[in-house]
Image (cartoon, rainbow, N blue to C red):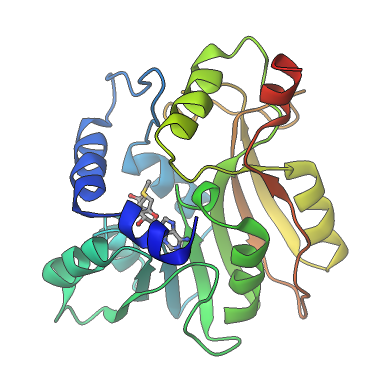
Length: 257
Ligand SMILES: C[S@@+](CC[C@H](N)C(=O)[O-])C[C@H]1O[C@@H](n2cnc3c(N)ncnc32)[C@H](O)[C@@H]1O
């Protein structure tokens, strides 16, 4: 998919779709739709931010949409910059937030080429976005634009989920059918590479099956898992990451070999 195709994909229609998914997320409601993506209640994110707090200063949110999380960041007194590849999303964020004293910048930009100088941010969050990106480029950019000691939060999909997790399998097949950008992380490799570079993994939440993220049902060392939420602290230096993701999960390949 070219950059222009990606920009066209994340359009007004997707904005309306995501708004409806976020609105239906909530305690007691089913958040798994067969063959489709699912989303989490904001309180899931808030509990992680409380457990693993922000550094004082500023925060970059990559894939910020209309600024759904900004009220949470504002509670923590952060200066907020948001970027999103989608013009529709950034226009909506500007409509909601322009003029708010906590908002520093709102920019149309892809995660893979962030328009900021090195070591600009004390915190970075990328939530429900990374699986749509070219992850080695995006995470390398996260490391470039954050300061040593910065807190970084991101979520993604693991490349090896349980073969009987049909909700996960159907979501993978459904995403491909819709040409939804969807990449699965070799999470073990990613953790190893981040540690080798001297970054600290503060917490890794592994969500064994599709739907577990929405209910915040996680394990520390499951044999396999579908989604993850990583909290890390950037080390003093970094280098660009090699390829760590694939458009097909290992589970899909095993089931179709
Ligand atoms: C599922 S929504 C999540 C939005 C928001 N983070 C949230 O949790 O509500 C995915 C968002 O990522 C954005 N996005 C997709 N690919 C991107 C990329 N390569 N760089 C930056 N943003 C991207 C989309 O435009 C969309 O706003």
